[in-house]
Each structure stands twice: as structure tokens, then as C-alpha cells.
Amino acid sequence: MSKAASDTLEKVAGEFEKEALADIEAGRKETLARVEAARKDTADAVAKVLETSVKQAESVKRQIIGAAELQARNSQLKALEKAVNEAFDAAMKQASEVEGAAHERALAGLIQEGLDVLGPRATVHCSAKDRKAAAGALKRLDAGAKVTLASEPIDATGGAVLTTPDGTVRFDNTFEARLERMRADLRKETAAILTGA
Image (cartoon, rainbow, N blue to C red; front, top):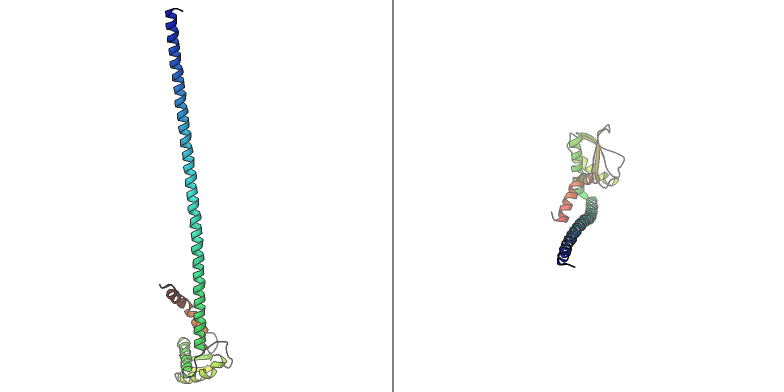
């Protein structure tokens, strides 16, 4: 083969090699770009999955904590209600055990409160055990008051229920009614004592 043919062949082979290498390099760059894009897409997908997982975990954590706090609060409220009820029971027992002149004075004060609300004319209703003390208390009242003692006893631990002569207005000043009216305030005070607030 002649030198010119050999040079031509070398030249063609060189150009072919350059083109082949250029095509290979272009293919390599394209493949690397695709791999990089796939890596980026995968990293983004993993990041989204992790972010969603973290949000879900945080949500579950908040739900668990919220449920535990609610359960603790409910337990605290039950304990508070139990303490208030025990305090009311103790107060009712203590009030019902007062006897003699102190009992008569207390009953007179409860009747007077009722008269202050209803006016000087009223009928006093009390329990059978308070009837004697109520009669003594009525003697202590202002002479201008026209108060009668009802013949039928009521079911109460102590205190009195006053009604207008026609029975249309009723003032319940029994121990039970007074404690019930004070229950909300006593509950707050008991809660403050128990919680140290």
C-alpha cells in the first residue's frame, strides 16, 4: 500500500476514532447527567418521605401527649371533685352535730336571712329534729315579724325553708341548699389549696 493510501487510511481512522471518542464522551456525559438527575430525584423523594414521616411522628407525639394530659386533667378533676364532696360531707356532718344554744342561734340567723328576703310575714318549715330549736329561734325574732312554724316537717339535715303565707315564694336556707349555693366557690378554694395556686 502506498504511503498516500496509508496516510489517507490513518487520517480516516484518526477522524473515525475522534468521532467515535466524541460520541462515546457525549454518551458518557448524557449518562452521567441522567444518573445525576435520577440521584437528585431519588434524594428529593427520600427527603419528602422523611419530611412526611417526621410530620406524622410529630402529629402522633402531640396526640399521645394531648391524650395523656387530658387523662391527667380528668384524674385531677375527679380527685378534686372527690375532695370537695368529702369536704361537703364533713361540713354537713359537723353542722348537723351542733346542739343547744349554738344550734338555736344558727337557726335564728338562717330564719332571719329568709325574712330579710321575703319580708316580715312567712311560714318556717324545718326538720322534725329542728322543731324545738326553731320554736325557740322564732321567740328571739323581731316582734314586728309575723312568722308561723309549719306543722309538717321537711327532709333536711338542718336549717329552714321559708315561704310567703300564700306559698308562692320559697327561700330555701337549709344546710344542703346553702352548701350547694357555695359549691362553686368552695370547689375553687379547694382546688387552690390542693394545687397550691
